[in-house]
Length: 260
Ligand code: 6PG
Image (cartoon, rainbow, N blue to C red; front, side, top):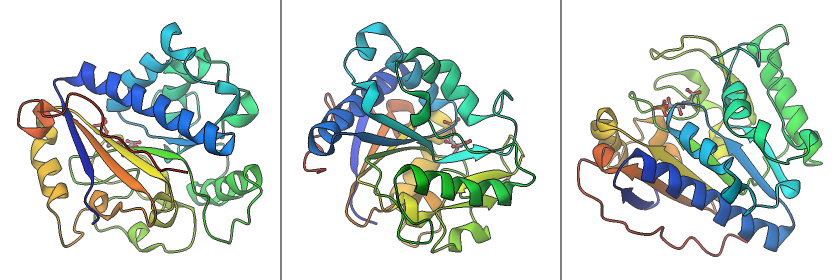
């Protein structure tokens, strides 16, 4: 695992603020360098507050939303208006409140007959949007937000599951792990996750302390989250003091320049 940047802030509110600032910063860099910003959103409770902050008027104005392209790093195989849907959460907290063209929000087609079919269709949808071949190398997204599960999962890549061995497809079906909600998932694979320019893990709360330490010191790749190591990109871990088990040791975000 490449050495990640680690930033520990005081509490979950500061974590949300730091995450929102990091998204704005990455977006500005990407738009300046390439004219657009592509981001994969995560589900889970930790990013919710950051999404809500990004949707506040002072923050909305800091980002040129007409140049933002959104995909989902993972999704639960439920209708998009189901309370468990990651798209639904992002729509309620963020996407419904910012001036982003709807055609630039790529939801996973969970109305299809199976999670497998949805994963295949999503790879094609993402490929079509970025004018790429879904059977070729994955897109190089500007930013992927990820969470850390209590069992070391990230996105919907659960420990011990065959989805961890996928080396070609961009999105695949993933059977649920032991954590709720126990529904089938569609997840980005390591090839897609490790092709991006910047990954930011958002980790909050005392219950994440042991697993965060285990993942950050995992040399054997036992935990899926420890296998996030972009080939030509950077990783930032944003933790609150409770998840880190120590006091604040990062008053400002480390510079992650050079993403072009
Ligand atoms: C999901 C996720 C998942 C999540 C982690 C952490 O759809 O559930 O994308 O990987 O990020 O389980 O979740 P919390 O932020 O709620 O702890």
